Amino acid sequence: MLRDLLAVRAEHAIADGGWLFLCPPVKRGCYAGRSEPRPPHRKTVHDGHEQALEDADLADLPLHGLRHTAAAAWLGTGRSLEFVRALLGR
Image (cartoon, rainbow, N blue to C red; front, side, top):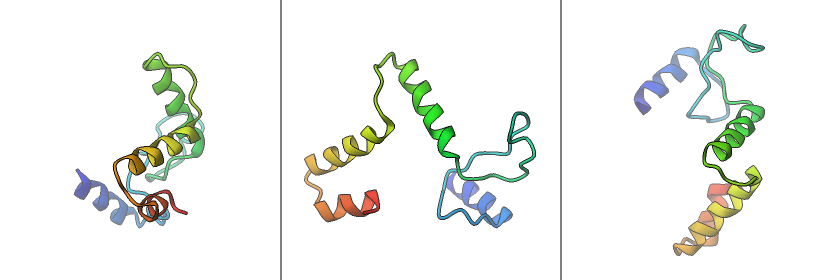
């Protein structure tokens, strides 16, 4: 599956800043004119997060809170601060 994703990226010569998982072209809606895969728009990510919370019947959790949760989990498993900083991009 990852090889297929990389082939699609290469086929479209997508300059996306290193995104591996891309949103497919949309057939309807405000992005319907798009003809090639693109990185997800931040609104897409937020909408998906809200839907996942609703589906799991969970109270509101800010999306940024997941970043802190991931950092705490990595640190809790003994990963170094440098490792976590590299993963989080800081």
